[in-house]
View 1 (cartoon, one colour):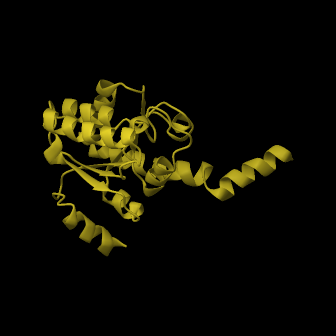
View 2 (spheres, one colour; view 1 turned 30 degrees about the vertical axis):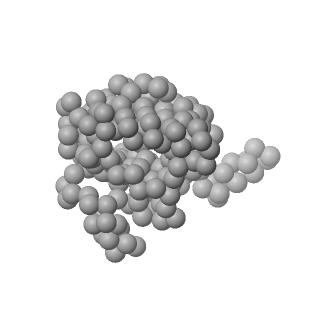
Length: 198
């Protein structure tokens, strides 16, 4: 509900009028949050007017926990820790997506990302790495942007494009939503499967 989103905005200490980037990902090396943090430090060289919320818990393994610590240390060393809120594991992911203006998915590897589908259904333009199923979902330059995996500078350029251009974000939002409703709902997919059999 809109009331929940307002409460969440206050709880996350998000400033009015500052674009919010959302990332939904557990702290695991494959999710490449380190690449995103490096991209954001590049963004800050030209535009400091953003905040970010990362939704997702620490993975259970020792490798995941060490990776989480590494990411937090990287945030501090690059000076972006004040602009990024790590919200941890949350049940109400949809409400966090409603807070956002841009969705970021920097993964090194993906299947078909539910987080990406949900973000686009919410109407968020996305910056996503061109891995796994992401290129099937994101139409580059239309519903968001695709960038090479591990490329912090390319990720930063696309974030800067969206942060600096509210009209571009507004144009991409309905196209992102329509892309999911037209192609990735159960009804749309079952219609396509039936058509293949016919």
